[in-house]
Image 1: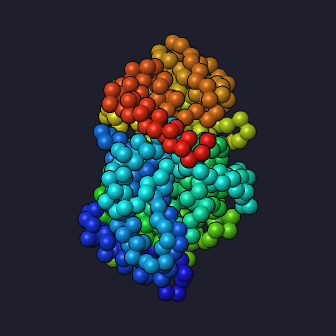
Image 2: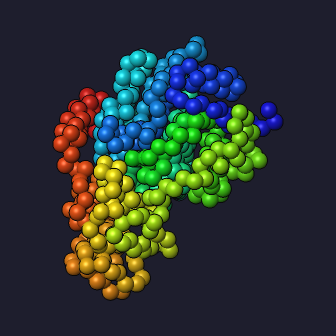
Length: 429
């Protein structure tokens, strides 16, 4: 091959172990680099719920296939799977809901929540926001890193693939730092500790809508690359974006991590980028543009106090995430919601809540014009988390609340206790 950055695209129509095994083995042989020493596999397990979120995480059978392949190399001394799931939900619960512990038992591989393990504070050299990071032990000690993203559209960062997967490298205590209008910069910061040797992307079923409660779309693809920038260049094109339009990908290139020119990537396989892009061209990922939601709620997006842009990764991301979870649990909830308004950031103009409540979301939010509403209520935070908003929005707008699900609440409580006990056992506080 004339270029040292490559992406292999292989048609795989189902999560059939034999089909996946053939593609994974081919890719490892083609790559020419052999896993060695301590190997870490990091999948995407941002959220999982057996009732309403089964398409947001990397399929565990594909992860198990990669585990078996890694074990075939004699130079591998240790093998682990690690992840830090979405903020405020114990990752161990997401592992359970996604079937990861069962997969781990079958393939004899430990599954670790980074938040329950020890970590090392490391200084970053290229970072714009994080000057230091609390690096999970498994990442810090790994000799060979395999990142396994789930290909998805993202509500504020265009795509989820190799680079965006690194948000799950962060401990919960640092996850929300700079998770505001600097989110894309933050994503690239983490690449300094989470630069993978191999990327195996689950694109058999991709996700759209809200990435943590993604709606499925069958694409029938496994994508494997030896370079995270190259992997995202191809992923962006598959989902209909020019690589330079994916902000964290553009920033990574500007920081010297590699070209995002499509011609700089060697693409192999039995299906073309053009054909895959044609298949995804009709997908509407509705939460990417909140103004397009079919609802009586009105949204007023203002700018941050120190910027000239919408705080896309902060309060607005929380609004999208909260509504996405509510609607995934009870489809149609947003459409049936009571009239009202939500304001984020500094909004220059008037706000009309259509006879309902006006929510001012976030510490900095203010309206420069007139507010017409039955009542004005502020929800404080900077940034606000989706979980906090989910405890407010259902009551204000008459939607069913996931916070009082009779099945899920006890599970969250139980797994939170288990998490605390396990952290104490490992001295991870």
